Image (cartoon, rainbow, N blue to C red; front, top):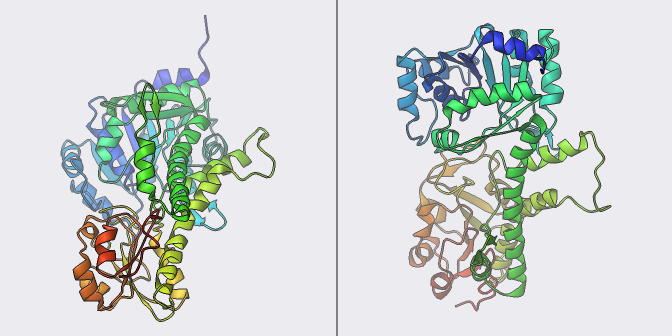
Length: 478
């Protein structure tokens, strides 16, 4: 007969998970907390939020049953109201209440302190882990949901929890990583329906974490693995998407050089399907933004550097993942180069030209401007002496950048109109209107998202250049 480990005995004595805490009341923590609270098998969920100047307002809002998240989130506010009214969810700034719980999850962002040196800023996460460690009791489960460098759960997190609590992970408490996989705009749906990756530092920890997440899944299944494998899964899935985008961006640059249309090539490549074969490709564009794709490659790379084994890899060769990041980071510079080349065809320079930038958010019809590729493009234009105006129908404020929602005001007297975001509003841009407002005989238009019809603009005297449009980029000027 196999004897039970110390941790298994502690978990058995504690019984099923009834009380749960979620640290971090943001895009991940809020929906996760209220879904736990809505599950009949759980008795109570506490959402932990610091009573700070910037975020303290969330506590009262949540306790009134209101959502502090902006934007459309189907069903979220109703669910918050429901679980608050039922007395199953409460938001608190009192971290000592962690000691009341059976399980605690941490959903705290892990940005980079400085994108140039690629060192992650784990300060907020470390504070959260320390708070949990201070009030940790034997038999509890701790789960990190933040995207982290592979090795963090079994390394830094385990070490801090043990130091703060005087307890031992895998013996006195369970520890796991279960990364979030959500998109803004469909938070509840994603948590319920996406498969959940769950990785404990040992079998007992994994089993306990599976018990925590299973009740909130409707369509999704739990996929158990080790903690480090779970960390790699999360960073790798975003790294792969970044790689796919880089592949089509590089192909677009090749097609420009060869004088052909990347969208024709894409349609051809994408058509091969069936019998298990697929060549599905993504879309080229003016650059990649957001909180995840711009950093998760570097978490994966750091995981290899701090890992246990030796990496066997072609000597002197770049990581294809880091190279993909470089290609995607180059796209705003390529947009700038297209703008310079188009102006040169008219005998103009960037210095003294007016550039109308259309789009500050990095994603279509959204206000999310985190790590937007529009920013490096704007910086290059300003450095070259251009005057720049920015239009976006969704982004209201951005530090240090004036953004207008008046398209006519932005386009007025512009030498170059540059589409950087694929917002629906830009698909209806008309050549006659844009030429009249720009008041130029030959205005420049640069399309970074393939939203306009080149021939319409070329026919009206525009100098057109588009990403991947080698078939049009050297057209005769009308």
